[in-house]
Image 1 (tube, rainbow, N blue to C red):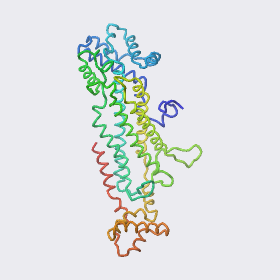
Image 2 (image 1 turned 180 degrees about the vertical axis):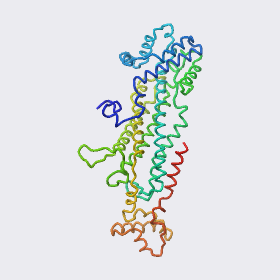
Image 3 (image 1 turned 90 degrees about the vertical axis):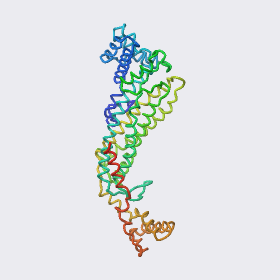
Image 4 (image 1 turned 30 degrees about the vertical axis):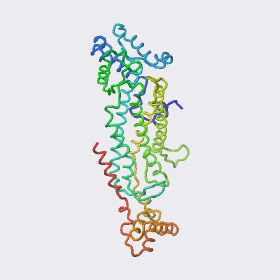
Length: 442
């Protein structure tokens, strides 16, 4: 097995991440590092921090040259960070020492690496948001379509009361909608530029340090936090937390679909289900199972990353390295879970007839709660509950429907809609339609 399932030649389709994977490659990192160094030189030249002609040269050159990441390996192994080797390689490649001397002026390795990471994370999370919106749109359509499709609600894995499949879909979608709205409200300030020098003071950047940072943020379309965040990992931990909550919200749908598609229930059919190597009858819920595994994996990675958020003193190498080990896998894991979820929702087949058959099974015990409230109109509530339990027990033993037994026991009570599914789904249809409308308003 490969060190990363996302890089494995035979596993990568199972853990397909859409357009995310190319953003977490060495070549993507080199490209982002060049963009940051070039933009920094340009704004420093415009502000008179370095000669303007050198700033323009370095900016233009950064968009044309390439750096071989493999050539940085030995020095990075020695230095613990790639920027010293990167800057040296870039200066050599430029073959213009009169300009190259101003490269990386006043910055530190963490400034460049963190800012380059933010450039890639901005694209990655933009992709996640776009895919999430597409998934929400599909769920909204299904929720509206099945707003009044009755089904059994299950609590603790057992039949509870009637609901609608549209409401069940809305329950999958509402946490996702909240996450979408949360990101939409915060994305303008979620991706920070870093430029504060060796110890976060900006001393080597000169008197225009703050002005330079603001100009760099504008040039790269990043947020200026107006302070050093070498030891303040707020943007990293928030993004990781959001991604983790997204993966876990997706796992809710996956868990439900895995249950509803079981042979014993069979109220849902999953398009693209997987086959067994030895049992021809099997149609395994591969997509749902993979989402559940990815959510567990992402949650574990987030635990490591959040624990590493306490950076000692002004900068902390060990805690920083922990981010390198966890954040890419966390984002890719969330992306893969979202890809699977989108496929599941797009290919979902609903067996409304089977849902109705399930509702009609069990001697009408699913109406036990409604019966207890109907009886409570004629007697104290505790007594009504006891009588409903007794009637349920009798129905299960005799095979007689609960409705029939209730009418026999209380011939003078008009039970009306007590045993009608359409009257016992409560606000389920309205919740389904409200969710669909909220997504439609995005």
